[in-house]
Image (cartoon, rainbow, N blue to C red):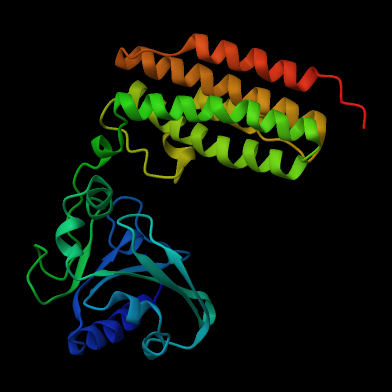
Length: 292
């Protein structure tokens, strides 16, 4: 059940967008438009705006004040299509993300896999002056987005190479005593690649019906139980020996899952690369520190 504040804010926004010539289309996406895992009391509101002068709109804060009392606002890149979004925290914790794209992106969003993955979960048309989006101002039934999130063999191989490249890189940071940088690598960069592999593994095990979402969202719902059970042990404390342990556990889980994904898809898994990297990593961690 969406929060009670969403409806009135949406109607204020719709009235504003309808009167603004530069706004060519506007959609609600995300939880407020989904029928699968729909909005609850903690959900924000995601509005996509297609504008003839996106930089001018994103650079202004006057227009967002028409929809509520602004506590603060920030600008960030959008997750897809290279746009930017103005994220607004209104009074009483009402948060709205206004993603702004050029007007011509109404075509691109329906053609790119990333855009289709967003729209495929359902969207609600608020304004469509150029008739780019099918449907009326009601949630559009979602389409199957899971196949869009599956990796190609090239993407899989690139991820594996990326992961193993950064394992000795993290070990060097540890050996130098740069614990903060090492922890960012182990529990940040490598974990993102691990979560991506957990998703590919779930898809390989369960088939096309499983929806692995993106960036680990709802991980606890779709990850395979054995992978999910091992996941907590891959995280580490801000301490040298536990960081070494976490790096090792992260590598072990990634390797096991990646090999199963490769086997399920009949792809090559570079065991020789992994072996060479692990040997190099051990030599880095066991090296005698240089005398100053």
